[in-house]
Image (cartoon, rainbow, N blue to C red; front, side):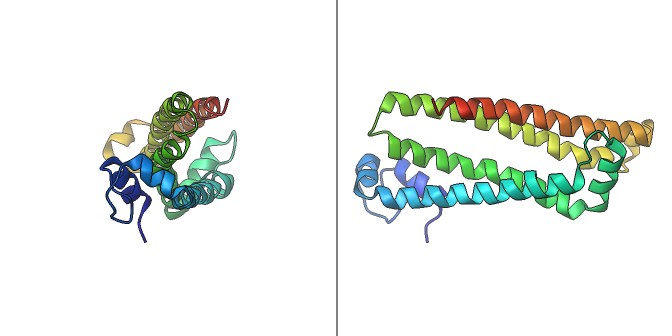
Length: 183
């Protein structure tokens, strides 16, 4: 089975994912269904990981308006939190080859419109990737490193909560650009 990353790279170098030479455009036009299926698989991975990270884990660990409870929940379920953050990062990684597949499939319809959609989606992915940095800050903020002793535990809990809120704001901004490509 060929990965989506090898599919995208193969398209760039002018080979189909099955090793045949030819123009990338000809490959997509010859077998758009294979590209669409890989894109659908990537969407499925994104949906499942997003539902897990933003739906299940966030609803279990984040107590809205209560920084202390949220901090306690995250520290009590460190593995679950780390798995959730890893899932969020994988979502962004899967979105890159998906964007390339969308471009290849929609380019024959309207090159100008698909380039505009790619531009909006790239901005969305960049902002979303930055939003994930805020999630990566939560665990170290709640840790017990020596430099954190300058803060009271309540202050660290509020800082971690601020990182979570910053993620939400940045992610919502990313969604604005993601939604803009649909018009």
